Length: 193
View 1 (cartoon, rainbow, N blue to C red):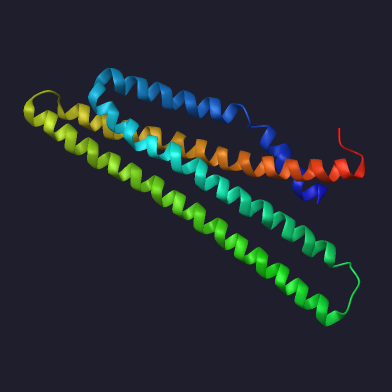
View 2 (spheres, rainbow, N blue to C red):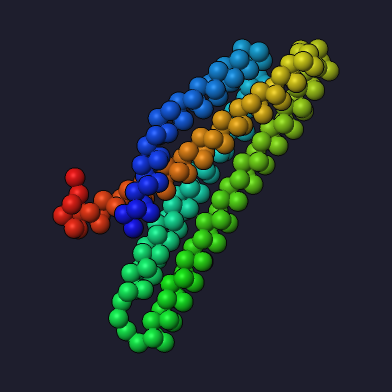
């Protein structure tokens, strides 16, 4: 457990600060340019990300709960491998533990893919909104076609750092759970810092 849980915690520490700073910097610079270019159309970009600020943390908390339960179930299963008891009874208990791990993994993947679907849906609705509002502005003479193209390109440019920040957030939450698990075990053994 120490090896399998401490390595991801240590590797996350290398990107804990640099990754969000880089990605947030890219997002802010592109968003700032778009606000200067056409403030009203920038609201469409904001409308793409505001719902994500709500559902991403909620779904990630649910993923983290399942990941913590999965880690505990795997620890229980691996600890029971060296335990004593009747062969058939142990086998049934182990089958039950691994079935729990499978169900928890399935729940994690359902939530992850649902979250990715919702994020992609928001992005595509943002493109439709930019085309709709931008088309209206072009027809009414308030902006040029190049501005609409710049906004579509800007939305695509902002989407990649947003996805990276979301992945970083997911990794941070799982790493936090792993660290808490390690700390509890080390504290129980009297070896915690």
